[in-house]
Image (cartoon, rainbow, N blue to C red; front, top):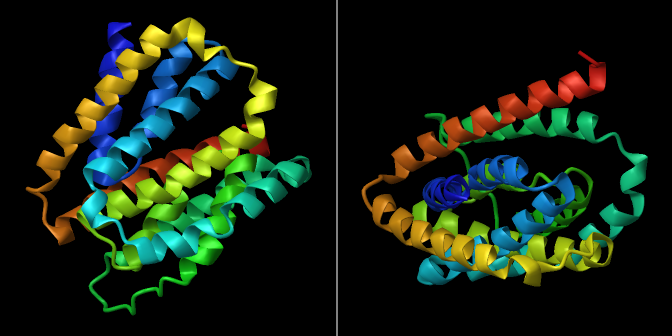
Length: 243
């Protein structure tokens, strides 16, 4: 279990500095210890804990204007996504999202000046995140470039994205809860330790983030996004085209 606890710390540190990628790292390690269904269930619960920790630690930096616009349509989006998920090819959607992520991410760090996206853009993002979360489970990398284009950097980026993703995760948990049937009480000790490590990692990330400039932050996030989008594009293309 030591590897799992170390993965929790690394995931919290990465997500606390860049706002993403930690969840993917954590899920990949959970799959080494638990079956896929239990891994997804545990991952969902830990993501709620991790996002809560980031919200509380970075609370003063949350942009509530962006958050309020975002949460309005999360539940309707998740409900619709759950209803019609069977109609979509997840691999095709992932390929399209990968291209969109790459384009928006690097457009945000180009030297050319771009007008900031208005807070109202979050209304559509909230709906899309709830919808996509039920179909492909990928929302963090999708959200990140739009948050950058909205002028949210460093602490504001981490905090606001954490609040928004908390609502997305809770919507998913509420809709899928009856299907999972997981008894979390049987692994309460492991969950407690992993949650504590996630919180400690988030505290360390906040201290590290103070030493990163706004421009450097955008570059780091864009590089991480590119790695995630590239991997997502390759794996989804393999699934769609069968290679």
